[in-house]
Image (cartoon, rainbow, N blue to C red; front, side):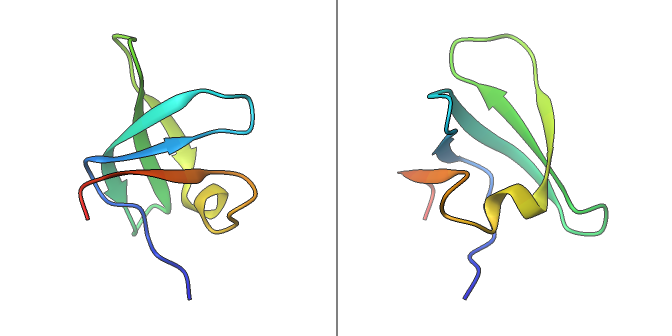
Length: 62
């Protein structure tokens, strides 16, 4: 079963970046993330979070 990311959760990318989830837009199928230590946000497709191989949940809001 797919667990949709939620605001406040932290994820790591295969490249080793750590991202904090800011917003999840299910209608547009996108996730807005803030890279750790950066002052900008990035949009990622929601499907990138469906496979545990791409984005790994590190913790944060349950």
